[in-house]
Image (tube, rainbow, N blue to C red; front, top):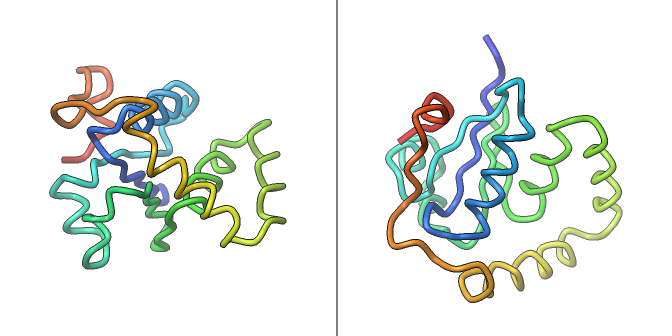
Length: 131
C-alpha cells in the first residue's frame, strides 16, 4: 500500500489553488492526494484545530503532520527530481522560514485573489481529491 500523503490547502485561496495546479501537473505518479482545509477529510484526519488554520498548507505525510514552510518545502522535495534542491532552505532556522511564509500567507488574498467557494476538481482530477 502506498504511503499516505495528503496536502490540505485553503480551498478558496488563489495562491493555494495555483500551488495545487502545479503539483497536479508535476506529480505524474500520483503520489499526492489533496483535500481542502474546509472539508470533511481535514476535520477527520488532522489534529483538533488544524483544519481551522487556513493560513497554512498542511501536509499529512506518512503519519506526520507538517505545516507552513516545513510542509511547503517537504512537498516540493517529495516531488523529486530537480526539486530536491529545495533542501537548501532547511539551513535557515524554521522561525525565519515561517516568518517569510506567514508574510506571504497574510497577503495571499490581496496578491492572488480569493474564490467565492472551494475548488471543484475536474473529472480528470477527481480521483486525487478528498472531500
